[in-house]
Image (tube, rainbow, N blue to C red; front, top):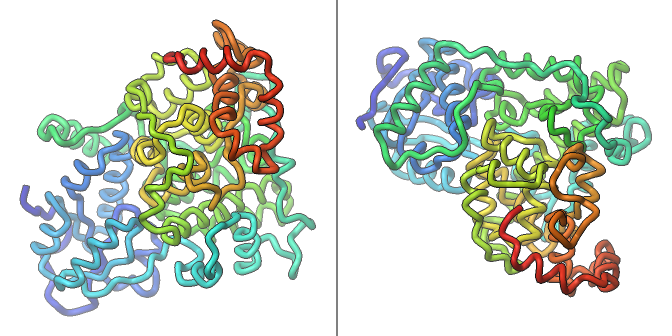
Length: 511
């Protein structure tokens, strides 16, 4: 496939500033239309080789292509939109050096620096999509190796003056997490106003047809999951509508139930902003200041606003910076010696092969839309994988590929550090796993499940309950040395049916 210009003006001469090449996760107006770039021509490149190499969920491919094509249409004559086998092919054919912002992955960064050495890229600018620069994070981190998000989050609040009254946190508390852990209400849905939903257009129809043709024509292009209607914003205007709908109609109930799970209400009060944020359609500081304004004017309570702000300015930024700070060797961390390959039903997103209602429903959510919120990710998918000893590097790639918001920088620290404790505690103070009791408390899954969360041995033994004790037994030396988990080991040692449980779980091949 040769490089082909699909839209834009005729190739310009060498006058004017070098054009700005935008990656697919750099699509926001605060990037391409800021003072530094408003007079620049914009270059957008669709690479078939990148699609084939990265694969992943079909709906993620749709979102990325739809976002790029919508921006090309929005910018009109200011943008040139190219389709090519590889990025280099298009840059050579484009015929002018370009400036580019530092990409969001190490592999893409190495590639861009090689292009700079070749003269195809004239300047590499800092990544503009996070509030805190990488240089400022390294100053904050110093020589540290073990990091706690709460310390970083408080410093972010002070640095950017978010929810602060002078030098004190607004409302007198830094963290309202204790108020944001309610079990789901005893009804089928949360009953809140729906999120903003996009309306597909001709560009989406074209993207879908092109992806169908690509799969038919290229055996090296494989997607996971199923196709479906686009459910996330891919333009700056759509992202603003999604943000406004969340702030005006859903933020008030977000905090209280942010850790709950409901089988009949996958959106609950969640913002569904992770995709537009990770496509850089929204400036994170604009988002958190808007949420702060809602708390300041009394539209929502402090706990709801703080919980959401912590996700954006705390957790999201923390994960981004640790991706770079920990370096490429972090992907090889496997302190718990977990080497079990992911089973076929897991990699195939075969929810129908799973009996446990929680695991089946969450896996179906990944298959059908490439998205579930943070608690199903951590306490269903991640906890299951931790208990069963799935290989953390393979699991990290699975999360990256199958989640529509799962870019390279997102998953390593989230999965290897937080979810699988494979870094030995550099990032989290304890492994995050639980028995069925937690799932029963925080969800509505257990009531009509074939397994009983209170039963650990027998035909209806919950695989999470039994799996929790199997995991505890396997790693008892590590767990009893940690004051946050030592009690679990003591409790395990009092179980009269422990040997029977361990034998049962060694033979378990159905979940």
